[in-house]
Every structure is written in structure tokens, then in C-alpha cells.
Image (cartoon, rainbow over all chains, first blue to last red; front, side):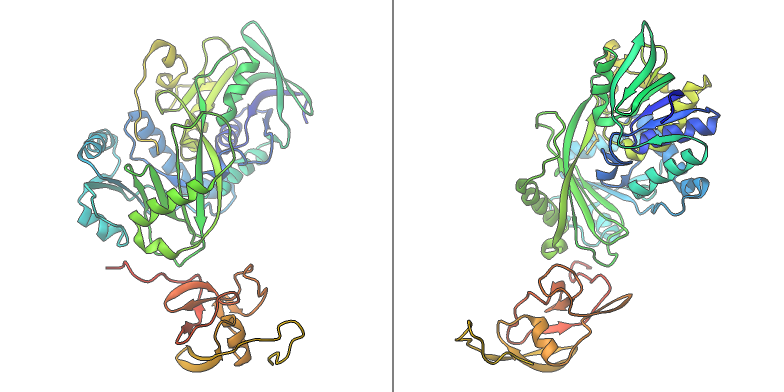
Amino acid sequence: MRKKADVVVIGGGSIGCSVAYNLAKKGFKNIVLLERKYLSSGSTGRCGAGIRQMWGTEMNCLISRGSAEIFKTLGEETGFGDVEFRQSGYLLTTYDPSQTERLRKNLAVQHKLGINSHMITPKEAKEIVPYVNTEGMDAAFFCQEDGHINPFKVTFAFAKGAQDLGVEISRYNSVTDIKYKDRKITSIVTEEGEILTDAVVNAAGAWCKEIGKMIGLSHPVEPERHQILITEPLEDMMGPLVMSFAHDSYIQQVPHGGFIMGYGNPDEPKKINFNHDWSFLEQMAKKAVFQLPVLKDVRFVRQWAGHYEISPDGQPILGSVPEMDNYFMALGCGKGFMLSPMIGKLIAEKMAGEATSLPIDSLSIERFAKGELIVETGVV
Amino acid sequence: MRIKQHPVLTSIVKKEVEFTFEGKTYKGYEGEPIAAALHVNGVRVLRHDHRPRGFFCAIGNCSSCLMEVDGEPNVRVCVEELREGMVIKMQEGKGKLKGGEA
């Protein structure tokens, strides 16, 4: 491992790899990415593999829209090849008028920003997803340009792009300490030794707090466990991802043929917890069979758990912090994978001292202290 | 092909039943694995997925013998017991679910 770097990126998920790749593209020369296990092992590789633009805040909409554009060409641009991007759509369903009203308000934000989403009737929802149960459904929302992408392939594509541009990726290497003087981080201490560095990016996702503590900062971000399962593969039959706000769940058939589905319990204690349990299986099966009765005899193959890093307003935390001069945060906060292309681009622009493509200063961590929160209520 | 006598399983009660495979009627014993009944009748190819797939692990692990039984896809016939009148079909690829298309 190099002993000196211009930038150290902490975290080898989709965001860390995207940041490293975008920094290298910007012309940053000596970049080291640190990952405590293997690439995508934290949250990216455990996620539901959906990408969505139907958000309720302008910044979430803009970042996800920009990311969808980058996903289209990512495989080709990095020379990685197919990343399984399918704009097969998201179908959001609501079961009471207050949910419908909330999502209908979000449509106005989306339409202003050019996102092609629609409110539809339960009957129209059934035309899009013939298997969906419309019993009790109040309304549905559909965006064809949302869809699926393979989280592993995306991470590996960013990593390949980064490595081809000279980035060193150090796997199975945890950060154990960070040395700093006044307002500057001077070096990162890892299991494999110390790296002197000019700048640091915290892309540690659900573990970002631990990194913050090493420089005496308390980041208001908590890991929230989400459980998920996949069924046996079946011939392609569904198309869109079905997300229900009444069930707080999502169900999607992935290109391999299996159905991925999951939900999290926001009332659980916030901590890293990779355990998964029977009660999830029972509850998820009930939610899935209610929404898509055709799945009743389908066998599930395995289940697992991962984490959303939850910020107080459900929006990403990007950019610099008031206490440090050379420390940057790149956190997706519950949807990091699907926002990773734009987050990487924006952080690279910010660190290069350029004007950013989107006004990310509103997503600085300072907003929590100042109370300038714009709350995203639609994270499932 | 069949074990007629066994030193431990001394009282195997066998009831012959009929089932169909790809529209043709065959005979097997009630309660034996479907795959065993097919095997004894000379059926070796159980599924097509890029290439023919046959009877492989025989303990429900490998997914090689997934077939359509009474309209349900992805049934592991090596561990599913045979019953009178079962309609068994070769499965193409990953299996298609029935119902709900309306």
C-alpha cells in the first residue's frame, strides 16, 4: 500500500468507488481507496437493486435523475461491460388517501424537474403489472424510467474505471485511526500501516459515524437494518418494481429471474446488525402474497440483512464540514447505491474547487445544526 | 431396476398408481419420489435449461430435476412423492407461474 496519497477514500461501496473514479477522471493523481472487507460488502451488495427518481425533494430528484443518465453509459465508459441497467419502471401503490395526497404533491416536484412520472388508477396499475392485487388500493404512481441495475457490477465498473486511471484499491484493510492537527487531517492509520494524505472522503456509509469519531466529530447518521430475501428464479414476468407505502416494502423481479423483496423496521434500535430472522420471512411473505397473489407457492432461496444509513431528513450528506478543511462526506443516506454516480461526480467537482453541477451546499452536514432540513418522507 | 428385497425395510407396502408425463401414462408406486418413477420408466431428461438436465443429486439440493407438477413449476421431483393422477411436464428454463395474468 502507498505511504502517501493526495486523497484517501474510505469505503469500497458504490459511492466510494464512484468518488475514486470521478476524482481520477478530474485529474487527481494519487488516490487510495480503503475497504475493510471486499468491494460492495457493506451495504451496496445487500441492497434491493432498484433505482428510483420519484422522490419528494428537489435534490433527491435531481441527483437520482442525473444518476440514471450516467448509469446508461457507465458500463461502456469504464470498459466494464453490461451493468444490467433496465428501465423497467417503479410502481408505487398507496392504500389510503393521505398517502396518495403526499405522493401527488411529490409529482409536482418531479414534473418541475422533468421526471416523467404519473398518477394512475388501480385499474391502470393492473394493466402495467397484471399480477398486482388492487384490493383496497387507492391509487398508484408510475415512472417507466426507474428500474433495476446490478449493484455488484456497478461497483466493479467504478472500481475498474478507477484502477485503470491509477487508483489503488486496498481491500481487507480497515481504518483504525485518523491523525489530525487543528483543522487538517494529516494521515490515516490502517491495519496495513499509515498513509499521509492531503484529503479524506468519508464514504463509509452505515459505518460513517465511526470514522467521524476518529476526528472528534459526531455525525447524526444512524444505521437502520433492512432485511431482504430472494426467491427461486422464474421466467421474466413482472417488469416494474412494486413498492407499497402501506406495507413499507418493495418487490422486484431481477434479470436472473428471482424476486427480491424487503423492508426495514424503523422502530428497531439503530445499530449494525446483520442478523435476519423468521419473523421477517413470515411478514414479508404476507406482504408479498397480498400485493402479488401469484407468488404464493414460490419458494424463497435465501435472506440477508443490510443497512440504510439514516440521516435526520432522508437526504444525502455531501461536501465539506465546518470543523475540518480537508475532510469530505459522501453519504447517500438510505439510497446511496442508486445515487452513487452523481454523488461521485459532485464530490469530485467540489474537491476540485469547481462549481458543482447541482447546488450541493444545501446538502452539507451543517444543515442539521442550522435546522435547515427539507424532509424526504418517501424512503422505503 | 427396483429393489425387491431389503434387509432393513422388510415391509415395503407398495401401491401402484398411474400418472402422466408429457401426456403419456406411466405407472409407479405411490409415495416414491417422482424422479424414481420416471427413471424406472426410462425417462432421463427432466428439464431443459440451455441443455438437457437429469436426475443428479437426488436429495433436493441441486435444482437439476425441477419439473412442472400439476401446473406448479420448479418442483424438485427427487424429493416430491408420487400420487395417483399427477400430471408431470418437462420444464423449459426457469419455469412459468400460472394465474394472475388477467
